[in-house]
Each structure stands twice: as structure tokens, then as C-alpha cells.
Length: 435
Image (cartoon, rainbow, N blue to C red; front, side, top):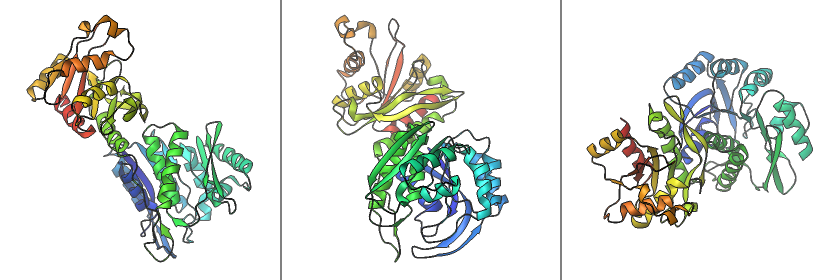
């Protein structure tokens, strides 16, 4: 998964481009960057800022977009109207979700957006955004509305949405009083409210951590409220783990996110980007799963609550990753893992005899079972067919299989299942078959 951050440089690495790269990495995503400005600051003080010339901002954006598949884009610090106009001209036709994080001042006191840039920010960047993520102070400035209560936050969110943002979240941490922090999400026309205990210390990088982690979660296909909640909880834990590296503000330190999700998400992204992978996606579409160690049930196996579907010659994720999200592919992996615990991942592909012949030629261990021989009483029990078939196929096996296939039954599509130790192992085997 590739995420692009368009933002300023922070030499303390607490926020800005450097903070975004750390967050993307914590989620197992690959971060690409376009630098809009260079700041000089540390944890105590802000010294200086200079914007990158517009032609170089344009060149950076073009160099990234012409070479990489991008799953989502985060826009952070944009210092002047020339930068804003350049970004707009380069991204106005982009279809990938854009997460816009308004950054007007740094926690160390520096001005990060010129006053005369705000009209262009509102007119050109907000309408590009899938979601905008201001804190209370920033939301007041954008909406022109004073926020003193939850009702005010909702009113301001509606005003910001009218500027063109599809969705709006206002972070309530900048209210000065109260033991709780409340964030509100305007998801299309519906409000969601999130709340947590106020943390008792200031930090550097919390806002960038939230928007960057939200960007990854949206790219993964999570429903927006779930993406916000995941990003919010990740940010809270990261702030709790802040450390005082310098002599001023503590710097946010990112906790590790779910490694099962990270590895699976990365492999799915690579799978979808394989040229002509559409030829291998079956009518029932594809799922890709990865289990915890020694899985006991489908709830221990992460898969797509949805499918990988065909989009031209490539694949597109429809749905998001969830433990228990897959039934059939997860059932197959669960059954293999019972006998061979090293096998924890799997994917289903379209059956084709030429694919099986290629697998044999590549030296993969191949098994099959005949669905027509399944006992009728077993067919009557929902969810038993796949476990029966896999158990039948591996009954006499002494080492783990690479491929198990069946040629279908009445009303049942034939299928190939690829197994591996982890998603990367499965992907290696897939590439042997499709290239």
C-alpha cells in the first residue's frame, strides 16, 4: 500500500513529512512524500520557514504520480497561495481519497500558513478532500464560527462541509476545560461522536499522527467511522508513549499497529497491482486471509469483509479487513493449519487447467478433491463443505500443500486455493503462476 504525504518538513521528526512517514511505516504502508516547505524548529522553539518554489512542488507531485500507484493522499502544511494553487492543479482530477489536515500554526509557535492563503485553501483544497480534519481552533478559522459546545462543533462541521468537503471531523482536544475530549465526525449527513479521557500533557505530532493513520485506514477500505475510531485510538496510544527526546515538548512515539493486518494489507495491495490479475479472479471474486498463531476459529483469521474485485486488468478492494471477515478461504486455512500449524495464509483464484499445469511445472505441491463425492448429509450442514474437502485432500499428506483445487459441482464454481506461511509467501507462489 502506497500513501503520499504532501506537507512541510519538520527537523525534529515529530510532525510534518517525517512524522507522517513514521506513522505510515507503523501501519506497514509505504510512504511517499512531496515537501511543500522547510521549517526550522525544535521541541522548544520555532525559528524559520521557507516555502518550496511552486515549480518544484509540481515536479515532485508529477514524479511520484507517474511512477507509483497511490492508494490515498494526505495534504498537510501548505504555506502560501502559490503552493495551494499548484497542488490543486495537479490533484483536481485525482480519484484516490484525499485527507486534508489544516495546519495553520505549530505547537512550537510558528505560523505555518500565511493569512492571505486561507481563501485559496477554502476554495481550492477543501473541495478536493474526502475528509478534512481540523481541531477546534482550525475549524473556527475555516468556518468563521465560534465553538464553545458540542452543538457549535456540529454547526461548524456543517459550514465546512458546505465549502465542498465530503466529510468533516473536528477534534475537540483544544477545548481548555473538562476531563473528557470529544471529537465529532460528520459522515455525509450523519454525525458520530467519539470521546476519551483528556491526556494531561502537551506533545508534538499528535495531529499529524491522527491524520496520517486515518489516511492509511481509509486506504484500507474501512468504513469512515471505523477508520476514524482506529486512527483515534492509535493516536491516543502514541501520545501516551510520547518521550522527551529534546528539552521541550515530548514527541509522539508510534505504537505498533496489528501486524496481521499490516502484512495482509500490504500483500493485498501488491496482489491488486499485478498486471492482468483480473484473469485469475473468479466469478465469486477473491479473498485473501491471514491467521493468528494456532487459530481456533474463523474469528482468529483476518480477511476481507467483502472481496477483491476486477477493475480493468487489476484488482480493487471492496470492503475492509476484519477478523472473521472471510468464511470460505478462512475455513480452508483453518483446516490446513490444524495439521500444519506453519500454514497461516491463503487466497482463492479462478480455476484453470493451464494454471494447474504451470504450478506443477514450478514444482509446487498440488492436491485436489472431488466435491461430487461429498456425503449428502455433510452438504446439508452449512459451512461444512470446504473443511470436508480440505481435510479429504490433506488426509495422507506429511508436508504442507501449496495448492489445493477442485473442479466444482452442480451450481458450485471450480476453485484454486493457494496456501503459505504468511501473505508474502502466498504472494510469491501467486507470482509464479501469473507471470
